Figure (tube, rainbow, N blue to C red):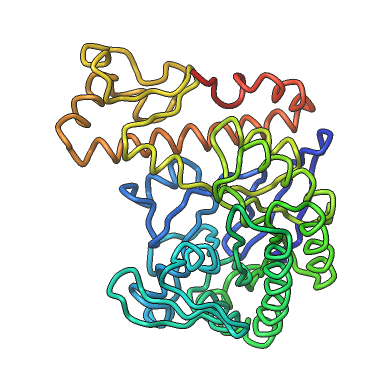
Length: 382
């Protein structure tokens, strides 16, 4: 059944596990490519399959505005709409609304905001955000939360956490009453959607702990850690994640939202995080920043103009086995669309290969030793 999270191997806190979903089991720890508008920019779904992507992320806020959740539902749900028969996770739109601080009004009932596309007025409540995600038909959906800004006083973080908890209960109640309405999932072998709660609380471990404990009492099938990577120092991010994990159940999946360079996702897996996403590999690719086993490569640099070697000699992706650094630089310098496509494919391959090596190291019981020298799993810093 979906949500029957199966831990297969432990290596200290790191876990090798499987999360069954309506569109297949997802092996964890897993990195989820971000496909905001039901597309990972520049990469066809067939290529994502070749990269062995098992789950990707789409965005509720953006799909609600365009093309609209009802249209997607009427066309058979998100999987059929985008031609993707593997798992999809949708976030609730809370972070995107948070980022529209100057265009939104927050109340107990929800958030009124103006579209970044045309200025039109919209309202998202916990119930509406959940209804949109049910209509989209994603395998894993998220409770609507309020993301606390950084920096924030303790009182502000506490108020935000309490609101997030009240909204989480409303999401859960709505979901339990309407979960059968998800399109395209009724005929799936293992049925239905999974609703995860999100831990908020700013940068205060004791507030996070309280939020986690009360979410666990609501008995969600999985828990996310949100509200990070909002401007705080990386060391503080790591501390908050580690201290929040102490209060989340060991037998359910843990999702760290929107965080991670290649070396960071290794260390978060080491802490016991099961699911991660980040726009970094795709966004950096579009700006010519590429991740390799030998460090970061700024492909715009003139020194690559006559470099006939592969981007990463240790990478077996279709980009590294076919094209030279000189060619990749040429494409980028000429503003060819293919440059962004190839760069994105490689960066995704690097992230996905990093997670494969993490899973392999856990299965061999060698992850702690390997992760302490991240070079064998992730990325060296230049």
